Image (cartoon, rainbow, N blue to C red; front, top):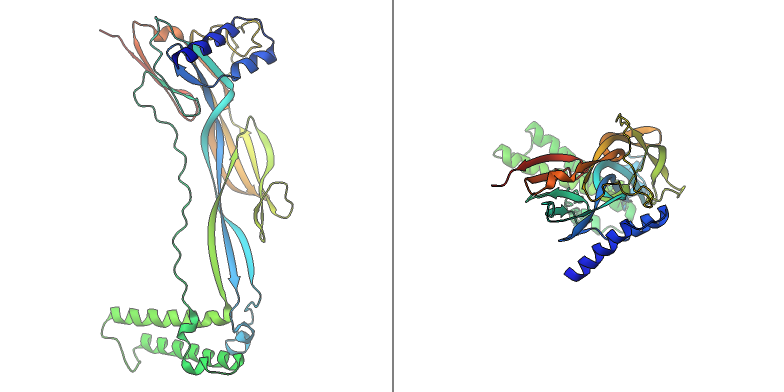
Length: 369
């Protein structure tokens, strides 16, 4: 492993000193995977990606067995008689997450005069810290977990023997409607205190009223039908490299649910990015010839950090804004080189970067005894 690492960085830094065109320089540099060895390191700086979580509810309607008789016996003219499935968006949430910026890949070579070899990288190669024991990364949001559903009550268990023995559906519906009216009358008598068998205390009263409500809803569902609701989470990723006006993020069909952005069967949901950065212009350091401007002149003499900008992300349902939030955006800012002299042997320098933005969060040093 050590021999492979030595060869890797030998090839890398030989390439730095060779005259290359812009295109070949970028290919040469980005072809190496980020990592840390005793000889040096290759690392990324992050940029902001938006993790958009969309909660979609699926409502499955099943008509009741007695739906055609609801207008006659329960005076319900709007009882549906056909099954259906519909979808709707419950909520939209966006969270900023760091991803490697492949346009900001840097290399640093260690030597006997530096103490920067304790570099901590994230799993995807982003620089997190130097000489820091614990450097936490940004945690991925927990996935959505639907609440446990209540077990549906079987309405037929409340049908009496007389109802079940009827020879026609119309007669069953008529007797069931009478049963519903009796339940409602008994409930009213209990509330007024006029029932033949009144409960001994408030707890018993609540139990009796609860049981009457359960039977009433179950029997009524035989006329008006039942609706089962299921909620699912859909995660979309947006990585803006700059500001842009409204673009289709996804579409929602009331029949098919969440669809692709180019599927015209769904209603569009848009996203727009506004650049809120007010950073001063920065003069670029001289570029090393032959590297097409990918690396600064002192590429091996320091550590690069981000000076992030800011952006506003707004998600719309049609023309109606649903959510609008501001986030730090390294891709809308610029980078800054920390001098390699900060990491000499005279001091133990600790550098902690913000894991989301790659900006310097803490820089301190101790002079060793």
